[in-house]
Length: 188
Image (cartoon, rainbow, N blue to C red):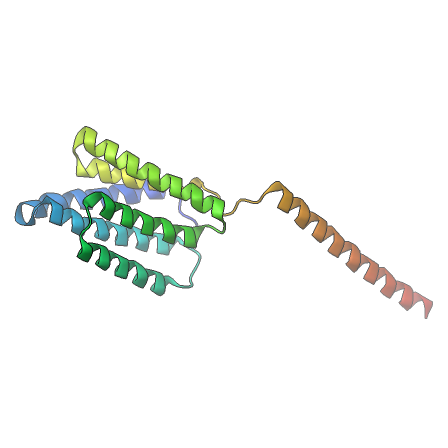
């Protein structure tokens, strides 16, 4: 699969926000707001992780990662921490899995961690300003859609120079061997 685009992330954000607001509006009168939110957060997390898996080129460990996420979600639901901590646990799980499947270095993963923190900030801001579950969820996933701007790997200038020297040394060694082989052919 090819890497997702920002516009694709915006569409996913809108769909997830629509379903979150519809489920909260439908179920809140029956089971209460807190219980509904504790069901919607892992449901959205699962949907987003499945979206990430569908867009990732990495195929190894998907079942294990999904099983680990399910165990984490079940334990978090069973322990029933405060809603802020509950959300933070799920955002951390999303960050970890996205870091494993889309980045090959510490710096891109740390940049994604900052993006996750920014998404929580945007969610809190939207929720306090509007009180709308749709806008809060949309802002959360809209900020997460920006992960496509983070490069998969960041190479330092020093390592790039070292690799170039190594490639040049390998080329020179191969050229010397080829020259020696040609000299040996022509002198016989």
